Length: 261
Ligand code: BTN
Image (cartoon, rainbow, N blue to C red; front, side, top):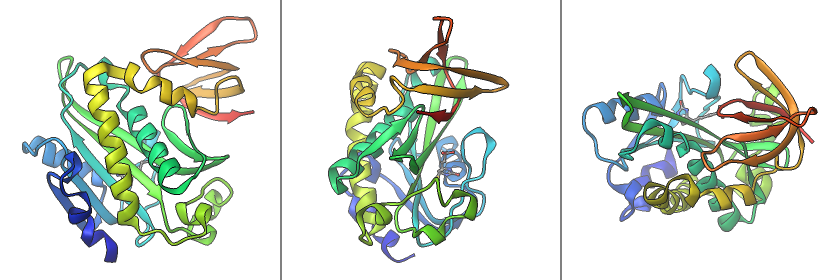
């Protein structure tokens, strides 16, 4: 587990250093963070594991979480806002990760709506936001972040090799995972504090500045729906606006951009 044992000292003093739980292995850091959330743990609690045996991706997918290579962690948030407003949290997370990778390692990291962090056409980080809700109010949210750090191409499952990248592959250096964690935690904290104060408007300009989809032709799947058109905007609530061939503007709240060019 090596460098992860230093996570608590690397995060000391920040919001995400309030409680740091480091594990050699967990089913999913999101599940453990949610259990801590239910038992009253404070905002900022961070759960990190060297390996996940049931790492979860978006849309019910699995997240490959082998040991020694990635940063697999979740943060517990108590944003005190209604569910509709909290929907922007995963994009806040993606912008925080992308900005930390840009500033810390000069990577041209971008955010592919809704919340994949990409370098060029390859994914370097995925985010899974989950929450517990009473009525319209968020009890807490869990922001789960998976960043490929030390992977070589062979370390990815075969079907992902052409689609995934890591901090090491992009920089040519074996960057310590705790160093990436500290940079991401700081970048995330500043965006999250602004988001609580001003909502999605606080992150939208930065997001639009690093969104490779805008102005491109996209194919999007949203549940059973398939949509093709030109991505023209991300609106003030975080929805992707796609202009169809007929000139209609469709607003998408969730989905998967399967192709863009
Ligand atoms: C995706 O792109 O599909 C989202 C992937 C999210 C993976 C992270 S790893 C840490 C946290 N725990 C999980 O089980 N999933 C998230």
